Image 1: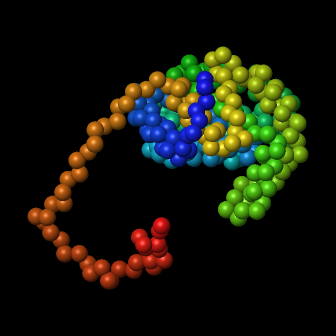
Image 2 (image 1 turned 90 degrees about the vertical axis):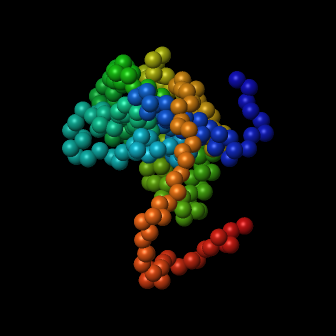
Image 3 (image 1 turned 90 degrees about the horizontal axis):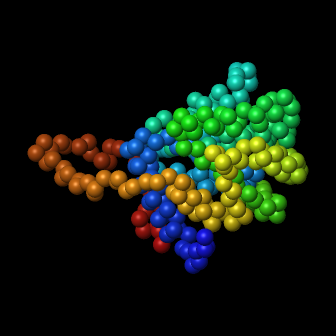
Length: 265
């Protein structure tokens, strides 16, 4: 495919998001079940892409799943169990910000699971995903690939910007030290789970904006959909036949107007 040139990022993002809205309407109308997995190294741009995918969609039917570490109870359950509860029902799109692949990545590299648990995951995962797909779930998997140079630059940015500081954790720094261990874990994971029925789709994410657009464009290509958006709705006029005398406005406590409509360029 020939790459596009001279693209205005914001205009193209809006265009693609408009198509996502059409896709969501189609998914809801047809009762489709869509699960999209976002995996990759720390600072690879998964969160930013998920935000752009979801921000124009109805949050009642497009949900982001970003699970914390397992509880003591969850540690005793079948490994996939806590993820199963978040799988899509008819008409839903579920975005997994990391997923069951934690076991093949961070848990493997940081020794959070045993060798037996790890090998069992590699055996079970393809079977588990085959079951999901046979049940009617549309499963799409993305791996966000970032170079060590770009990851370092993004980590350094997070140390300097207060609004991004929360994104940098001790685990991220340990993962940085274990770059090569993560590389090996990713390659082994792909060898077992990059299957014909459930393939991995790799996103080059060294450039965030192009990665976001490429991912959304690919999502749209994975599901055939039609435009079933409703026609524009005529907004009714206010019924003035039953007029109500409002409480005086000066009796209400308004937020101070630090900004007004004249504040903006």
